[in-house]
Length: 257
Image (tube, rainbow, N blue to C red; front, side, top):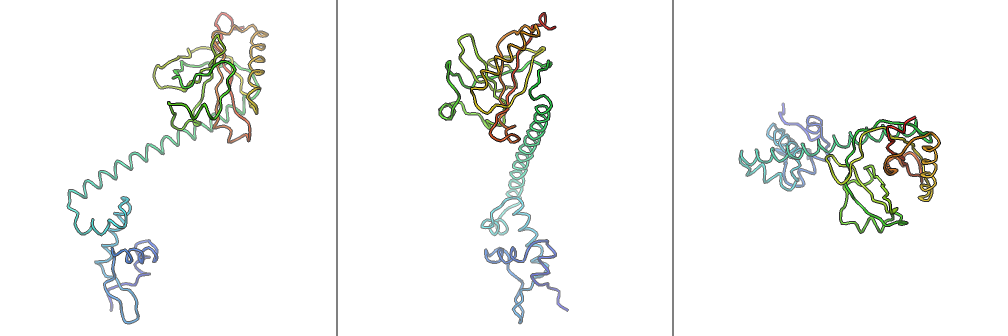
């Protein structure tokens, strides 16, 4: 009774495809023990262990072209270095997946909030938010692709972030991004008047700000500081050709009805 197995039996044993084993043979990293008189490739325990090592090295992202060198010449110390490097890559990937999970949670939560508050005014309590300056635009200027491209301060994953538009007394607009620590501007904690809106054209924002201020006046809310516009472009996944904005203004505690 033969102690060797065929290529299909080896593939089933190691949970890989026959094509993959043939590819390893083509690259010279795994050869059969012998080819029998029927031209069947036959594999012994030596090849089973070799294939196990090849699959482990591939799992560690060692290129097929380098596998043969690893198996033939790597020392124990080199293998330890390889495993440590792979561990660092795994840690980076875990961090990436954690950040992706947090972003997906954020999008789902923001979309739920937006849907429930769309076109309504409400008071909301906000903690202090730190912002860092990103783009400054002169009065009357609208954000466009050219302005974005000319920025020396590029933002990673720009449109996955909340962009804050803040105007000053001269009507100039400064765009800010949220920061983890004190930055260029701090939005103080307190009670904020808020409304969430869908906007198709930028010009609609001016009209919405007027409506927002009129609503505050009509309800005797005293606005303290500028009206903040927050753009959440990632929510456009849910509304084709429309941008999601939140208008915010800190209300003086003496002016809350």
